[in-house]
Length: 374
Image 1: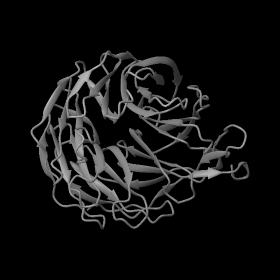
Image 2: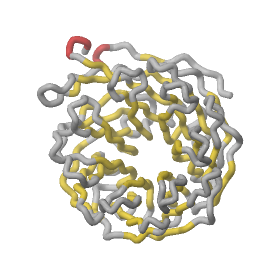
Image 3: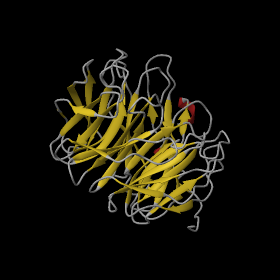
């Protein structure tokens, strides 16, 4: 277990900026970050109630530490010191799901150096058993979970950056998986997400091809197999994806973090799993991850990116019509590489967590409501 350092909290009011929504929406900003130490080089972060106490907890995948850090939440936006668990070689991404049908959250970790996925079963009180490794492909960089074959058991998809492929591991429902299935998309896939992109009720996959500046959709047949659809151009070096219905038309749209371009691309979805590029929005330097949430509670989805080059997050509020406001930036820990959003303090508003490999921390940015508190 790593020695915990108290949260590092900057208190300058100049760090608190406001997000302005439409009429009736809350005025919203984020407090300066509270930083908590993790293992070495956290590359990914996820939030879930790991110990089933009703409070959100944080888990981070530590690349240089070959470990996972678990920080249990108090329900007020603060967290206990991290507890570390061994993973494979070079953890790069992490997902939380119930792989053994016991009602308890488990972890799946993509090990970029090890070419494997480590699955760690949870005990329901915030601890995890030693993991079991499953081979996937060269340089797995991203992981997604879902029910890909209609049997209600949780499956795993992994983007293999070193092979231009996506590996699918179909779950048996006991925390183990069937032999891998490999689907070629070409290029250098840096992210994969799961959603129903063509509206047929079956889970599909979307991958970001960094070298080809493309987003490639793999349409699922409901039996665990996938067929590639024509790719869609994004910005320069797309490295991360998030999905949501940005214009409330019933189709899934995409936000794409374009690392080389310093932007986030908005792609409008159609009913056949196709996407149409609309506009790129500037972010901080080197956006490496993107998340989607309704931060100001106006009923319209917003976007936020983690910007590794500027150690910031950029928040763009949505107008509900596929357009977004200009980005507002908030400071994080060093080299913010991953981002997620959840209500950490039970105030009804989404907060932000980033993984910061440059200083071995996760940053917690709690939402602040009301113009009088800016």
